Length: 161
Image 1 (cartoon, rainbow, N blue to C red):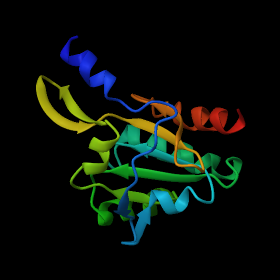
Image 2: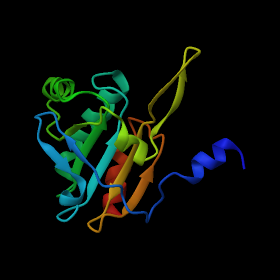
Image 3: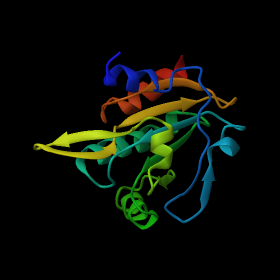
């Protein structure tokens, strides 16, 4: 087994229990996954950095389909501080919770905090990924390395199916 195979084996899969979390949103309010899933499905997506091109495309796409997802809840998570999340939300009128995972503990629990490289530089960061959590707290869909532009259509397809 290679190191990559070992990492892939540890990733979450459909049917796994979603790791619970409590994080602050852009207004400084605490959001807890296990409380939300009692009432509806929750779409949790991880993005690298607020107000960057890919993250903006993804967030605005999700904003634009909010009327089509019923009572499903959308939660965006990045390592950005609540104040940066608030500016991102206000700039684009996102209207859903953006959660601050500043110590990346939640990202690690979901297997999305990983080594990345850009322009020959290696660093740790978020692997853009998304998860649909059902009312029992189980993962009904898992998308690692999701494309920003495909995120809304993947969510709509999963909710319809």
